[in-house]
Image (cartoon, rainbow, N blue to C red; front, side, top):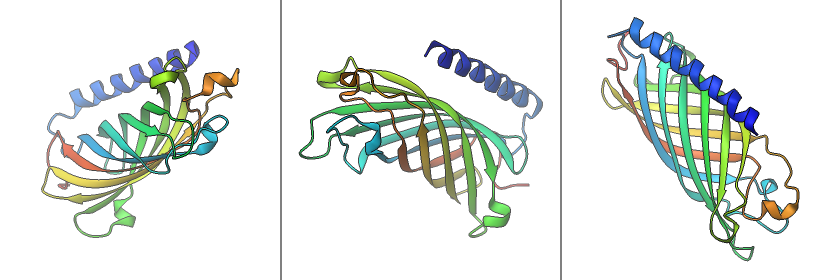
Amino acid sequence: MISYFKSFKRLWVAIVLIFSSALSQSQGDPKTFKLQFATGINSPSNGGFVEDFKAKPINFPTINLGLQYMFSHQYGAKLDFGYNRFSNKKDTPEFATNYTRINAQLVYDASSFASLGDRMGTFFHAGPGISMITPLGNYGANKTNFMNAMAGVEFHYGINDALTIYMDGSYIFGFGKSFNPITEGYGAFNGNLLTVTIGASISLSGCYYCD
């Protein structure tokens, strides 16, 4: 597990250096930096739980916060944080779990061929990250961490030159190991997660839609 953190720490450093270099070279460049915030729902895969533990199919909240940098009109990258909470399905063992993630992702602006209108935009994003699982209540000792890979699509609508609202659908693939002993998995999770969120994207470096 220590190697996971070391690898992701190096990835963080690389992303930060890229952002710093790009910022120093592109002051005033429009459409470059964007701050994103979204909230919504999540649905964990029941295969990520042990024995009789099952989660509700729809859970709230999911909160995502990210900083995005576009290298060009079509390609970019973003560093984002996600917080999710899910709890037990009725008639299953009672539990609640916090699922936190950090991901570094590549971004592709597909608006040129998948546009739904003049102020509509379509973005695809994907990249690796780390998931941190914290069971609550009686199972608080069963914390676990594992690597993940995330992929999703965003549909944006422009409110003005610097602000869009958007809907995001993402799937997070978990690479968690089997729980051994199995009691370490009570209240914990090592599977995949589907999220659907609605939020806002704010341009920090100029006009969102100008050329």
